[in-house]
Amino acid sequence: MDQNPPYTPAFHSRLPEVGTTVFTVMSTLAANHKAINLGQGFPDFSCDRGLISKVNEAMLADHNQYPPMIGVAELRQGISQKISTLYGYDYDPDIDITITAGGTQAIFTAILSCVSLGDEIVIIEPAYDSYRPSIELAGGKTIAVSLTANYDDQGSVKSYSILWDELAKAINPKTRLVIINTPHNPTGMVWQKSDLDHLASLVRSTNALILSDEVYEHMVFDGFNHISIASQPELAARSFVVSSFGKTYHVTGWKVGYVAAPAAMMKEFRKVHQFNVFAVNTPMQYGLAEYLKNADHYLGLPSFYQAKRDYFSKGLEQTDFKLLPASATYFQCVNYTKLNVPQAQMNEADFCSWLTTEVGVTAIPVSAFYAKPVESGVIRFCFAKEEKTLSAALERLQTLQLRKDNGTR
Ligand SMILES: Cc1ncc(COP(=O)(O)O)c(C=O)c1O
Image 1 (cartoon, rainbow, N blue to C red):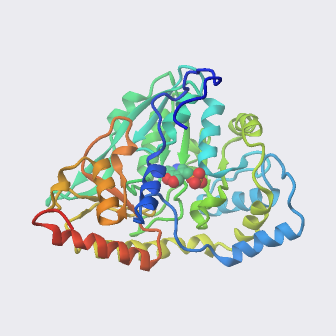
Image 2: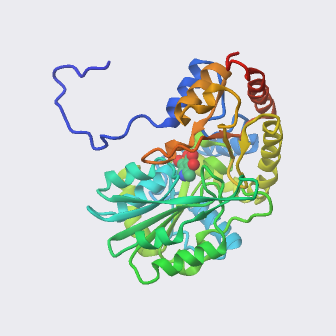
Image 3: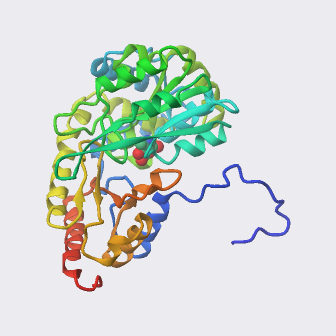
């Protein structure tokens, strides 16, 4: 129903600028046109049946009532152990770690727990689309600085970096929080130790906290390593670290993640968490706790996803799409402006709609990762798909070469 019935009182939107997220819009368009959906970031293959068995066992063992508000102890202990082993920071599982309904709730709750009216929150664009509305709902003001692309001699993007001068200017006494995302969606940029050290020098004499969104922590290729903020003790002491089992274990629909932070920050986080979701579903937590005991389940992800990235990028090389670096996450960004079809002149959102409805493959416009769309002719494909899905998508994308004359099928 477009119109409210007459008895619904008028009210002011808390988020007047916000519509439905681009991910939902593009997934709906993909479904309506039976396009191959390489837009929204989720796998189209099954998760490990062993993980499902562990959740089943938990249900059959009657772990079906409310869990502790902060999360099941076994899972928090497993996370603490994993972070300590991989990144060297010791979080107390009872005090410093809380299980959340996915990364998105962790981010929202972290923001609500520390941002007050008028506080400034620095984000780095392109940025995941939940950050800005979460900041607005908390009464904060978003200050966006940008990531910049570095080019090689042939004019191709070879890497990305933070504009440190811009970031330094953005951080001031009103800054309550700086949100970073590594590995980064959509560019795949991976923060290096020197980046974290640089950030530490910028916040050292301030009261700014950090939120480090690390939901793609286990998907890093080409010899890069994920360097968690938890591996930099000075920063860890002022940071919320967020991760997502949905991403790591191919179960995005389960919506289970976690946040780790020092005691004083976690105390405030939990005050909000208990009235936001209170707790996260019980059998999933028990199942994940058991599954987490085998490190191979996440240590195998880089080679698993690198093989998919390589397969997909090799196929794209047969087209006029220009590939951008994709050394982490499960996204491949491409520039479409050199395609020899008239639609190559379209803006990113229109191009993605056209690609969906006319070519049968869905992508996400990177302009959607900016508040004021920056048009650089770049779109994002998700390669977390079965080979047959990627192969079918490539076949359709390769037909673009045949359209050179009139741009139609
Ligand atoms: C950068 C980033 N942060 C957070 C999330 C949300 O994770 P979850 O699905 O666990 O809520 C996503 C999901 O796409 C993401 O790309």
